[in-house]
Length: 464
Image (cartoon, rainbow, N blue to C red; front, top):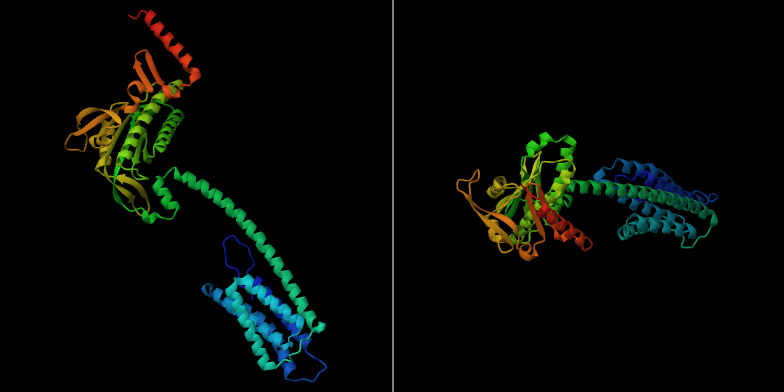
């Protein structure tokens, strides 16, 4: 009556347990029938039916095992349900042939209810009890039992021993199942932790939109489409020459530190890093959680300003590590409709952005001077109210037949004038950068004394 457990990866439960339980039930029922026979009475139809039913129950054990073991996998569930129905029907016949002996009847009915509810809830309970009633009816028709409740302890002993053994075996089986489930849950928790760590590491190598789609099983939503995007490109001037001058370890540390800072700033402003190409960085605004073209363009320009500011701060850090060559970064930004989606072959694909406006952003970066941020007219039109820019006029760019109007980004308007928070000046023998947002109150007097001391030294020094 117990269905075969479903095959679940990681669960080490013996599939022969249903056979063991069916064997115990049939032995208990057969033993009860044998004890119910009045051996001193002459042979008759009732005695033959009772002993014949006991023999059928014993033969049913290997027959049911053979049927279950040879059933196709796709039909195994239905086969087990029919065998469970047959189990209940045979027990019903056995109850009728024992003349409804009180204790065996109660024990076997209890066993049927227990198996039905543990095997599958209400539906199985209905099926098993239908089989039980059908068996009782069949036994009543072929035996005509005396409707006298029999409480003979001799008859009850076999059923009591059998049912007691059955419940002990089932308790052992349940304990083994629970122990296996605990092991499985522990292994699953460990696998989930490993998967989370791997997924987190994988997120560093993929665009956020692509990573979320893959992890949520929604790759089909990544269709190729046209979008109004703002594209950012930056690279380090004379990077190839720098690689020849530095040791491999120093160069690797410098580049990883630089790219890490650029990626951190891009994340702060909501940009999506499309790719790193050596020292070059490509960031896209508007593909992932766009807040509108104007907001995308403004966040991109603010990110570029923050990157330029951070690079200026890192110059001193690099100088202290023995890198005397000042690293200069140039940047280009353009806004326009681009094609975004998955490109590549069946074996290798990439989620990226393509189009003329992507090429223009790359060309603007190449045309920029060290430390300069160039933007196209389309980007300038979106951010001109919030960002101070200088008109650079028309610039010849590679791949475009006509000159392109570009602008040089100065700073956010809120940072200019009396509210300017960042000051930087450079001259031979002189270098200064001051970030008022990072100066604390307890350092204010110290900074003022340093500036006054520097000013007095310059005034007293006779410079030829």
